Image (cartoon, rainbow, N blue to C red):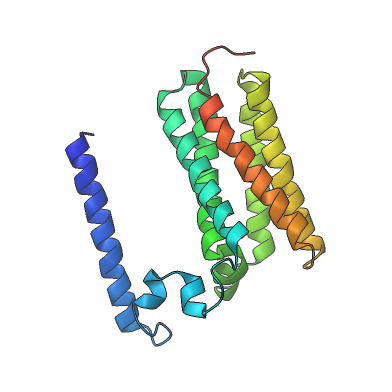
Length: 193
């Protein structure tokens, strides 16, 4: 796709997003005005700027992990493209989920059990781990992927077992996401272990 087509596509997507925002506000009794969809949640809630700072940093890290892996999947050696693509797609899905509280708030309201989505994520992670194991990587790339997966699993386990251990849950998640940020960059290395 040419750069002009990429810019036009991005502009069209952004235009559609803004139109959908305006239409949503007009059609919903629960959305008081467009600012509830466009402004920062801390500003709307009237809480200090640092409220949820680690969560927001984690969301940024999810975006980096997804972008790095998706971009790397386009130029990596052929044997590494699928694992990087799947890691990028999973990271993007988790970024959206974590940012928009999809598994905690959105899907349960629609009758989709929170636990079922967590099981689907776990199964996806296991499939991805299988791809990752069958691909030749340098040891630090393997370490980054499996450390990230282990820390993310720890975060989920802590979340399920206790609603009080925020530092352990969110700290483990952030470490896991940051580890996955390295996978896309390091996965480009052409010299397998």
